[in-house]
Length: 280
Image (tube, rainbow, N blue to C red):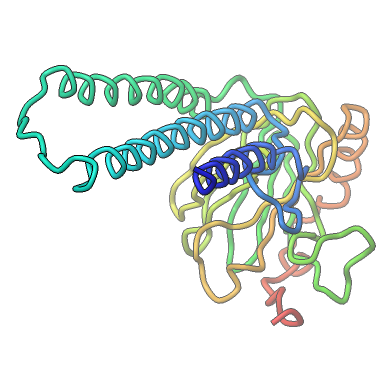
């Protein structure tokens, strides 16, 4: 019994840590973090809730099966039960073990489909950003404002205080807080994937195809992601950085960005240098 109590305490502690781990980090992973990053969008908040709900369901099923196994070992071993039962069918038990799993699956399916529809139905957008994955950096364009820029990883020797290694970039995406941002993704060469954990988005960037996702950041701050599709030797070195700002700051940034990135001369734009030369 002592072993079972310790196992139960360990299991419950693990569930609490994993479900509570979502509150540990904001915008980027933390050392020794358990669970998901803290959600910054309604979609991610729903993903975290669904993850924790499934975690409790799985834990309950696991503990129930363990309890049954212990009960059977204790109750029906040769010493305690020298004359084994010859029962071959039990209608009640068979109905229960058929109906209960069906009910569990329905309970999982309803919020699952609700979350999928929530993710896939893009609301009317306030801002549109097109993300083009390239080997090995990202190019972003704001179609409504008619400008485009490249975003490369900041090398370790150039990092400023507070910038995370392998995640900081020279030019971030900037979006306003509490606005619907539609993200269009495509690839210029091979398949990439645009993923930001705190926003709950991950979508492939495929050459010759436009995919679409969306987010609504509810808190200002810096949020990081990475390419999440193996795309070549520098796949690990093409991060994504999104700076969420107030409406006033966004308007000011938009005005300056139109001037800064107005040039269409490819010769003055960053080239696809190997951004990870000094971190290998």
